[in-house]
Amino acid sequence: MSTEARLPAARGFEQFSLADGTPGLEYCLSGADPYLLDSANPSDVFCVLLGDIASETRYDDGQLTAHTFKSETLAFHPKGSRMWINALEVRQRFIAFRCSDTFMDQICEEDVQALRRNGNVDNIAASTIQHLVRYARQKVGGLDHLDPWEAQCLGTLACVEAVRALERRVKPRKSALSEIQFARMEEFIAANIAENLTCAQIAAALSLPVRVVVDGVKGRTGYSLYRLVVDKRIEAATALLRDTDLQISEIAFACGFSSQQHMTGVFSDRLGLTPMRLRKGSGKTTEPRSR
Image (cartoon, rainbow, N blue to C red; front, side):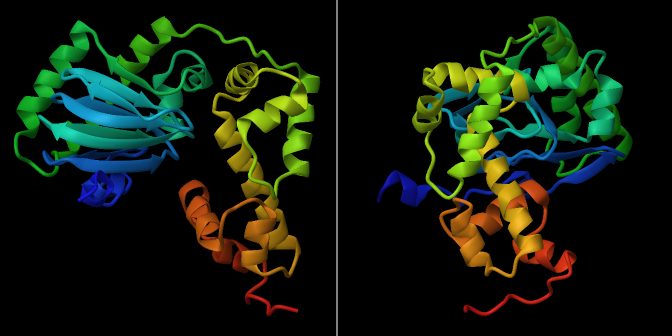
């Protein structure tokens, strides 16, 4: 049997049963079994690592690598990022806290976008974090849910300590792309939105190395070139859904999605609604027939 055949089905944090901790802060407790996590994060996520987790991990459009999330540390997964984590060995559970923008603004002393631009950060360690995780491990035990007050305090402290550590290490990033180059890149993406664009093609259109373009997009927007292209596809598809009578399958291909199902999945991840629901909200209540 192949490795892929043995993998559990990939799902987001909902597989661990999200619960409310306090307004703007929800959390989940993972199990102690191996899992496959595939999440496009609509909010900032902080994870409290109660034990080591050996995994295969890929962030955004990066490479799949062997990675260990270390016990008694925190991990930060910023809003807008995507992660694919195949947890092969789970020695103890994790607690994930998902924070609203309002909650993050209250926690951060500096600009939260500065934290997000630095991407996913794992194994954030400090003596205060170590004590916090040990306390959390004692409180969690074999429970499926925390006491609401306990969840509120633990989540708030985890976010505060993680942000404090991140703000100490954040360094301003300079964009390698000028305003003119960034505008040219956006024009190229828009003109070729139906194509299966690659990083190399986009870089070639600007006569720049791929790394310069990738780093430039990250420095200017705070997220990856992959996400920028996906966001442009969503924008183009949204306009066609609202302003035309094209079939949804036609719109999907016109905007570079591999299928209608692919576009539906991306819309659900990023916008929280399907293309059909978006179209109905614009007043177009039926899917038109082919001409």
